[in-house]
Length: 310
Image (cartoon, rainbow, N blue to C red; front, top):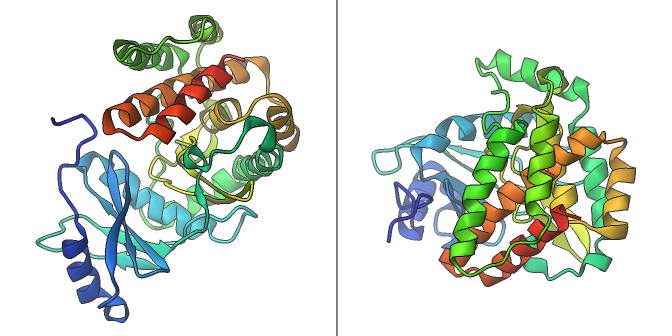
């Protein structure tokens, strides 16, 4: 069965090894294996130290170019590591889209970590501090200027996640797909989405630099601490609510309090938008995980929906 997130181009280990070895001889001969895949890219491990990211859907090309440019500009700015594109691959007849390689970051996705809610306080505090730095207005200005020098410009909220009407409609579609699989949604989901609709869209003047898709698969952890923020293909300018969703999807209780204390004040309207984004994103994540048989991801994503209502 072909799903909406199925790749348009399959990038397997043999093909990746051949192209990487041709363009980067120092890596030739290292074992290459499938590491992970998202709806728009495949990640392959090269030896023990390197990960290479290949676009496998054309719609992701623009985001991939911006991802590389932003990551190279942001290198070494944050206490929580982010990938640095060390190897920049050129398109070939077999791989017609650009690809890039970075040193592997330690840890596992939060979705796979099995970390209890009560053990997430240090993680939440670190993520809140990371987002405070990322969302600094001066960083958005500097990043935009750096990209402009390369002839690039960041999109403004390309996924329309600061527009609650759009978010709620898309969330309802994903929630209905989960319901068709037998899942019963928390009682307060509709109330959160309705309240977010009531406050309306964010002011474009409040846009900052955002990761753009900061959910429980894009945060790496080890021993309860963050070891990386990955997958920057949706980086853009947008209201902070777009990233603040992680505070309501991944954390609850004391952990959420620590996240918000580290981040700083969040208005009630922005909180509602962030909760709605959390429901929308994690509902889609839960559905795709259910279809693909990723049980740990499905459980964490369903728990995230419930957290976002509390």
